[in-house]
Image (cartoon, rainbow over all chains, first blue to last red; front, side, top):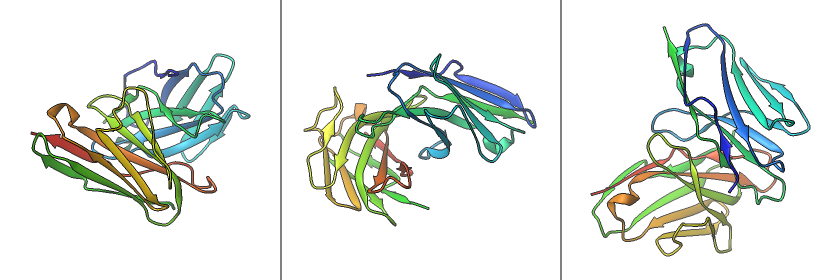
Length: 113
Length: 116
């Protein structure tokens, strides 16, 4: 299958700093991307999504950037808080792909006090 | 918002027995449900796609006779791990999308299966 991978397996940030989590994908047909947060022992929690006709989307304290030219996706978390500590996954799907989501390898975000 | 309820949250079973996991969409009709397996420190791997009223579509390498999926109604899908072995111990997660796709992908809270 197609590979959706992350550059950094672990990211440590100081509380209050901004966090940037990166994701690379290889399926050029991918047209919908989602970032999920997963806490230990729980299911993935939706954070923000973006379609391929956009290159930036903002939510509350989070921003997703999409660079289709280099097939790169990033999640920016502003003013990172201890409650943001979790594993973050990017996921992608493509029109005609049967709505199947393919998940990246994940990044562990650790917020240091 | 859309809610998917997954039960049980934890189950321990003996090797050779079967275990059923339920996934219910509580406030929407789920035309499609997905089943994932997640090993520790790893990503979610899609096992199968389940459409209401039809046979599930399994991903390559997933044994359909071992992981039985039933999607008999628009609000319920079940995954049965048959003749479980210790290597089947994992975190199983379901997700669902509704008919209109308005709520995107809603995930259950997962089931921790331990086979002893």
